[in-house]
Length: 201
Image 1 (tube, rainbow, N blue to C red):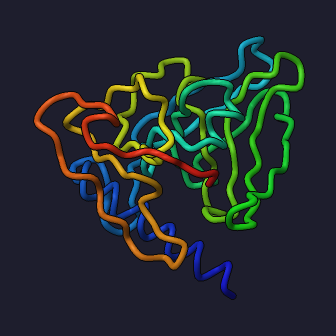
Image 2 (cartoon, helix red, strand yellow; image 1 turned 60 degrees about the vertical axis):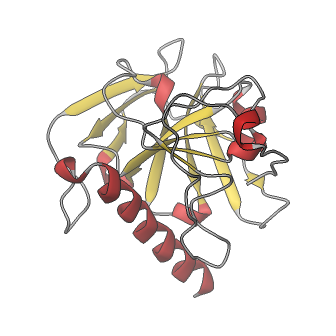
Image 3 (cartoon, rainbow, N blue to C red; image 1 turned 90 degrees about the horizontal axis):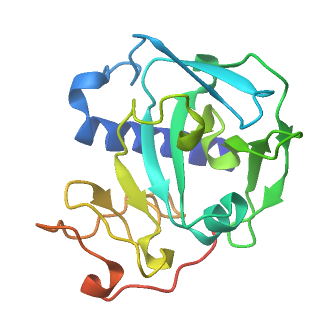
């Protein structure tokens, strides 16, 4: 029951975050629109998927898990209700990772042939299929709504002034909503706010 309750709290915070930033594209009852489909897939084309409607939310994650698992400085993740995502090519392979911090499971999904990351599922957001933003055929069609785990971002990263940023997650382990970092009037870096020292999610 504790896991179910935490997942419910997480879903509600996803809805709150999305509504706070994109009220014109989300319905208050289901938190999604069903206008249009978008496709994407891996580098070799074996794994393909199709999503329907807008993501519930989309953010750039700078945690060390996303850095290590993606092999890059950060990862862009778009959250879709599982019923809005269909894999239409080869079934992606999955690696199960148990966080050493909170003990929950994270399951990156990738192509067994070319190794490209295409998505992920997470125990904390069990009703959602996460899609890696760069794997869309058109990676510009959705809007990033937040940056999270800024404290572990690489030092050279510059953040835009018009996107919410969080030192770590936007939700505490206890399920409470975190406050974003103070808004800035221009592009900024970690050095401007003197933050750092991130942890795995």
